Every structure is written in structure tokens, then in C-alpha cells.
Amino acid sequence: MNALTLALIAFLAMAGAAACGCVLARRMPPDYLGGESIKSLRAAMALVATMTGLILGLMVNSSRFQYSDAEKDVQMYATTLMRMDIELTNFGGPACALRGNLRAFIEQLLLQTWPMPGTANATTPLPELARKLEQLTPQGPALPARPTPSGTVQETAGDTAKGGEKGSASTLLLNLTRELGHLPPENDIRRTLISLGHQLMEYRWRISDFTSNRAPTAFIGAVICWLALLYGILGVFAPRTPLVLFGFLAAIACIASAIYLVLEMDDPFSGQLRVPRAPISDVLTFMASQPCPSEAPPAATFSAPSGP
Image 1 (spheres, rainbow, N blue to C red):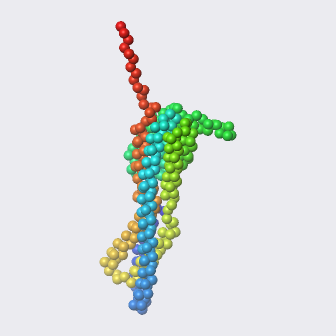
Image 2 (image 1 turned 135 degrees about the vertical axis):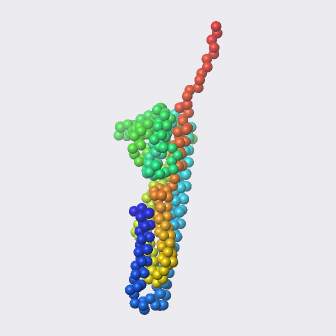
Image 3 (image 1 turned 180 degrees about the vertical axis):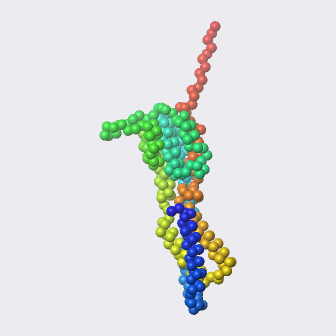
């Protein structure tokens, strides 16, 4: 159930409870609405209102911080991806072939984390970037095939880049990290690449946790029930005037919008208030504009002019 549906349910529940309270007040005996009854119910409803307001405030604050953390993680994620592409370019040779793996991972990450590309903040369409990067990714040299203990041959980096696009982003990232560990020779750039691969895995799991960490629907339902009870009691004792009716509807709309914001920010990668994908998609644009040194055209050679 999405955030807008739950917010509408909350609005209708509170408005319906207030209307039921107004109808019920007309059928109650006059002594039920005396001074002592009002005092007792006001004390009880004050406790309910305080508890509900405190919980809503904590939920809004928690969701806001979660959204901010997700936005920072996406920016750090994009920075790490760009650093890895730069290091792969600097390494040259077999590492240039791994840019295809990195590109496939970024494309799959965008498709899985932001499932509707048309509504996101992408700066360049993915198919256009894919065609451009196919031209920039060198066809060789690729990493040699490695036999496994069972005697079978493990796929090379180029095979992983081509076939891995059908897999999940997590699988592609694991394959990329595994290939980084087999880059020859062992030097500082290789160690930096392995460290960046571990950082990418950490950010991958953190973003996956954001997409699965949502407020329980039962908890939201309990809060809606408390609010409906509160407005039902208020409807019993409230005057039947247009001003009071307008005030009730305005307050109910504010509370429903707060519930909507809580649910929207609680899942930063879906709905209307989603974290922008621009930092990640900009990495693809950067990769398309930075070919490996081995892809540069050979320097022109000049021969000495021959004598007559």
C-alpha cells in the first residue's frame, strides 16, 4: 500500500470519526454531555493527543534523517564509482576491459534502484550512453580465462561484462570485485581498486537496506486509529458551526499530509519524494567522455625526407 493511499485512509478515518461523533452527540441524553463528562474525556483525550503528536513528530524526524542519509550515500556512491573508473583508466591494459563490467553494474543499479527512468533526473538516456560506451570500451586485452578447481574455465572479464547485464546489480558488483583481485601486476593502483570495490559493496548494501526498511503498516494503522478516536470524541463536544467544521477539516488534512511525508521519506527510492539519480547517471556520462589511454589514436610518425 503506497503512501498516498494510507494518507487518504487516515483523512477519511479521522473525518468519518468526527462526523460520527457529531451524529452521536445528538442522540445522547443531556446528562451525558455535562461538565464532569467533558472534564474527564478532555483529560483522557489530552493524553492520547500528546502521545500521538509525540509519535508523529519522532516519525517525521526519523524519516527526514533517513532521507538525508540516503541522499548522502548516493553522492558518495557516485564519487566512488567515478574514482574507480579513473583508476581503471590509469591502470590501463586489462583494467580497461573491466570498464565494461563497471558500466553494466551502473546501468543495472539505475534500473533496479530507480525503476522508472522517465521520471528520474537522468542527464543522458541510458541507451545512448550504452552505445557510446560500447565504442569506448576496448575489445582487448582482456583478462585470461582461469581454470577453477573442478577443471572448468571461469568466464573472463569481457564475458562477464556482456552476460552480466542480465543479472542483478549485486551479482555484477561481486564479479567486478573478483576480477579486480586478479589484475596483474600487484601495485598501489590495484590495491586502490580493490579498496574501492569494497567501498562500492558497502554502499550497495546500505542502499538496499534503505529500500527494504519501511515503517510497519500495522504501526501506521494503530496511529490512525488513535487519531480517529481523538477526533470522534472531539466531534461529540464540538459546536456544529461552519467555522468548527472548517477547522476540523484543515487539521485533519495537516495530519494526513504529515503521515504522507513520513511514508514517502521512509522509502527514499520510490514514490514522489525520491532521491535523485543524477549523481549516478552522471558517472556514465563521465565514463563516455574519458576513454582509456590505449584507445587513443597512435601518434603520427614523420620520416626524414630522402635525398634526391
